[in-house]
Image 1 (spheres, rainbow, N blue to C red):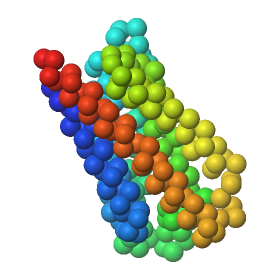
Image 2 (image 1 turned 30 degrees about the vertical axis):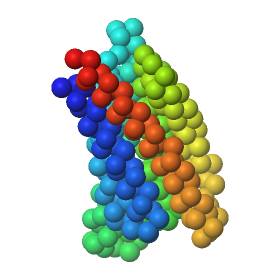
Image 3 (image 1 turned 180 degrees about the horizontal axis):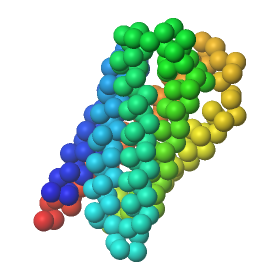
Image 4 (image 1 turned 180 degrees about the vertical axis):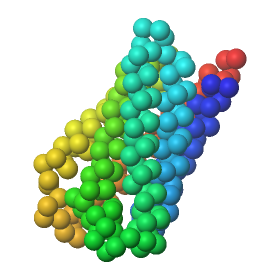
Length: 204
């Protein structure tokens, strides 16, 4: 069951990341918000599956990966569910909607979103560190997970440094490109994770 959970959650993460990339290209933000919520659910389950494989000496590190993965899930689900409900339906005053809107670069919820992905980066780093690579694919996966942890610096640092205070259409376009680059990076993580658990399933 643990291996199957890892395999299917990795497949879910890969599919939802791909759909997210497509939604960004076609400009369908509602789809992007919804699919990212599902992506987070799959990712949390994936971290749980990796935790079950960890040797005793690294279990605390892997558990930290699960914990920060859950924190990522809570943050981005609050952000995106709010966009799909309160913001989309305009069920609050205009001033409140402006605060809650993700579309305003540098806004409260935009910062929450970045912080959430920073927690995801920290989660992947811890999962990667705790992982025991058994073959070439695993080694690549381990490297990708650990390197992805470097996103923590920009995701947490940019809102604190308030670099979006003079945001413009060009910076919004740059943000879209950055998200697409992240998708290109993260899809191989999902694929290699699926391959990893698929091989483990075949060993049983």
